[in-house]
Image 1 (cartoon, rainbow, N blue to C red):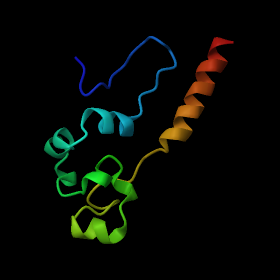
Image 2 (tube, one colour):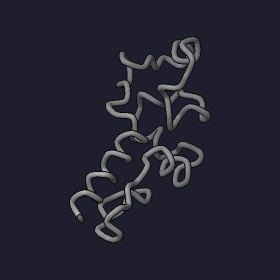
Image 3 (cartoon, rainbow, N blue to C red):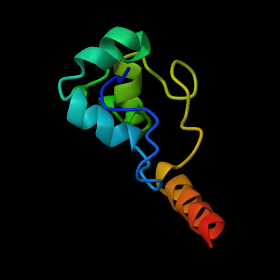
Image 4 (spheres, rainbow, N blue to C red):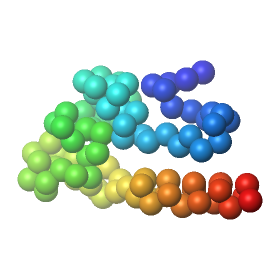
Length: 93
């Protein structure tokens, strides 16, 4: 039912999982991530949960260029979290 502590959870309504923190907390050595996301297999552990922060030379050395071999982030999690919490608050008023 639950994978690495992520999933939908109705209570409390404002719980918004952070996929980066979930990866850091529940896959600290990157075993799960490397198994199921082969594009990240050679990414150094320090960048594994946020590969888009890798310098270009590191991307090239591990053959994981962001935007080519692995997608760029679709959203900024902090901004989306704030927007979602504001929408939840508005809907409760």
